[in-house]
Amino acid sequence: MTQQTLNDINDMSREIFIGTLGKIYEHSPWVAERSLTSRPFSSLDDLHETMKKTVQSANKKEKLTLLRAHPDLAGRVELTTSSQKEQSGAGLDQLSQEEYENFLALNRRYTEKFNFPFIMAVKGHSKDSIYHSMMERVENDYDREYETALNEIYKIARFRLEDAIKP
Image 1 (cartoon, one colour):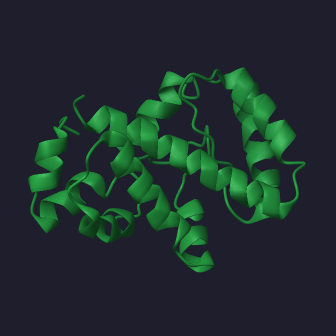
Image 2 (cartoon, one colour):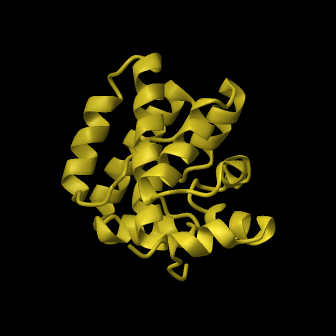
């Protein structure tokens, strides 16, 4: 994604705005679409908070769909460009076969328990810290993990906005 200025974002047509920011939340352009009416944004923080509040005001079904739109960490499926960049930055694209199988088993256990994939803003983390976090979080109760996963999505969105918008 080519970096834009905040002024560019504020001046975009509806279609270009959704096309540009619709990828911030994984496979969920509705977040950008519903945030559009809050323009002009005064800062990156304002834009991020608006998009976050859009998700927070969504119904439970929409939030679950958003959670389920995220790929398994360290999974070997086709990823969006953003997810691929994030996971490779944490070394998840260079796992040994044993590490891959451990991640796969833990991902499966997590998804079976919560009915959505493990989500973590992996920027700044290593494969070991991610695995450790998975081990801890799989023990959470549903409500706590649902909120934790949404909070991780907000962090991911923040990182993606920082990459997309020139300071």
